[in-house]
Length: 145
Image 1: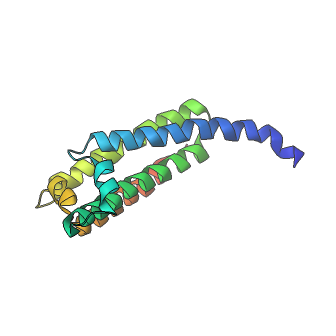
Image 2: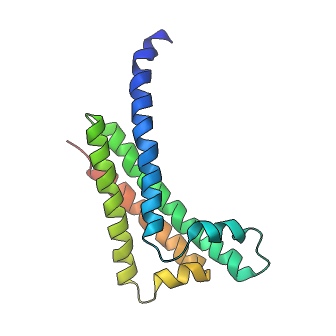
């Protein structure tokens, strides 16, 4: 057990960098959508109206997928990073490309994704989450030296 103590500092440093990066990613994702995800999530479980509950589910899928996609990129960045700056660089690159791919998805669809999710179209929320996760997996594989 004593042999792990030197690595504990490194673990704490990388954790202290990656968790705020994940939080910033979520703030960026929320800032790039025209609806307030947290307000929909908050009332969704207690909503007397089924449409509000469905909107909360669609948003939960969408936001959850973005979180997972970003976490996969960060996990790969941590694994491949040669320094904390390296982790920060890949984390920011991953965040930017996650947003870009989401808006590419928005542009390519024959319907208005940014209107369908807050309306409660859970199918679109699920598809969006899978696109975010697939994007994260692909970007994670691209991080190498």
